[in-house]
Amino acid sequence: MTKTIMIDPVTRIEGHAKITIELDERGEVSDAHFHVTQVRGFEKLCEGRPFQEMPSLMARICGICPVSHLLASATACDALMAVRIPQTALFLRRVMNLAQIVQSHALSFFYLSSPDLLLGMDSNSAERNLIGVLQANPQLARDGIRLRQFGQQIIESLGGKRIHPGWIVPGGVSEPLDVKKRDAILAETPEMLEIAQRTLTWFKTVMSDYHEEIETFANFPSLYMGLVNDEGKLSYYSGKLRIADASGRILVDHHNPEEYSELIGEAVEPWSYLKSAYYIPYGYPEGIYRVGPLARLNVANGARTERADREWREFRQHGVVSSSFHYHYARLIEILYGIERIEQILSHPKILSKHVRADAKPNNFEGVGAAEAPRGTLFHHYKIDEHGLITWVNLIIATGQNNLAMNRGVLQAARRFVHGERIEEGALNRVEAVIRAFDPCLSCSTHAAGQMPLEIQLARADGVVVDRVMRG
Image 1 (spheres, rainbow, N blue to C red):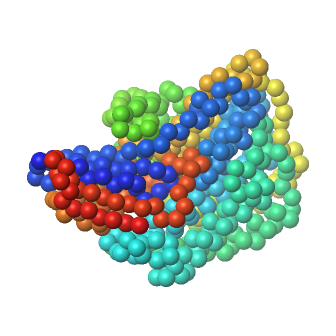
Image 2 (cartoon, one colour):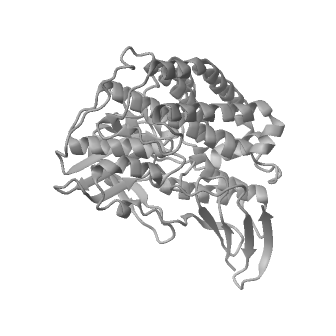
Image 3 (cartoon, one colour):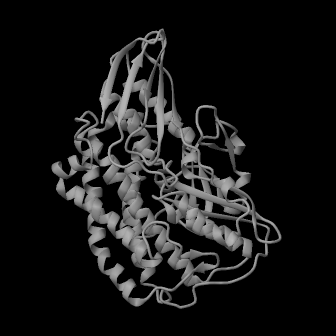
């Protein structure tokens, strides 16, 4: 008789989701799915709003990565006004985006995933959390808190508050940077660089303990997409799209993000509210691709900062990195890069210029904005009427672009670790950990406080429960 294992909710992710695992008559995994169980209705809610309100409104999509939506939205509004923002405004937008990436990556790695990496996938679930990390390795826990604080303080210093800042506006930013704030940020970068380097060194020593996870955590050939600059190196904002295949061959290079619809299609499945993006020339679902830290390091030619370039070369020493377990590794390199790049930008002689905003009325009826969010490439696409009111919105979120890969990864891990009628908590934790490696952001401004309760039941086809695991 066939059976179904349900993990509801998936823990230590940002939002609400569940996983179902189908077992055949022999107790072997026949299928598995990652279900997003909440509805995000922002695309419809925006209709009828003045386009100038969009950046501030879009920042409310998520409490974890509001800056990413703020930035992509403001860029789409720049396109509606057909303006070129001042260079200093471009610098300042980049600083805030990099601060967002640093703090979000710190949250993902230290708060959500380090309990698995430090304590082990099979460790006591009651201790497998940030408090357990603090007890087992106080330095690691403090480093994670400090890195996140650094990124959030930059966002607050520039934008006035840490969550949902409104400082990035159509045409640039609302006010310039002063010397006191700049110097305060620069004074902290040496400590942050030391923390980032220390964490990378530690992580590389524990990777040898996770051979099975590296082999089975969404480890398969796929395409990769990210933004690059004119030299093909990392560019988290104002770059061009590059898509590479599993061998590193570049399929699309320096493609204008405004023409994303030539490359990216979106499909829907009955088992999830999350759309699945795919590469149009390859079709659905063969056009599976990944975005985010792993993809960015796979498509780029380098990082263009000294320490991150050195780490990037080591990361890519054997070519394209296909295991999604290495999203963790890539995140740490991006934290290092973000700190170095913030230091570079804030040292530019024009960073204190007072000219930070261009002003104009709508000059186009359609605009697209793109940026690299912590989890991958983010697109905001708006259409307006002659009064500047929004008539249509399409948002392509990084998590949706990873949806096909996450589902394939859940199935791959379940087939390796889940067998028979006895539920092993560590096996199910590994299935969840595949999703945590991608760090999906599903919350859209809704978060659970504390530890989420979890009950997993293994039932026969006749409804008889043969095993049960409780958590929380």
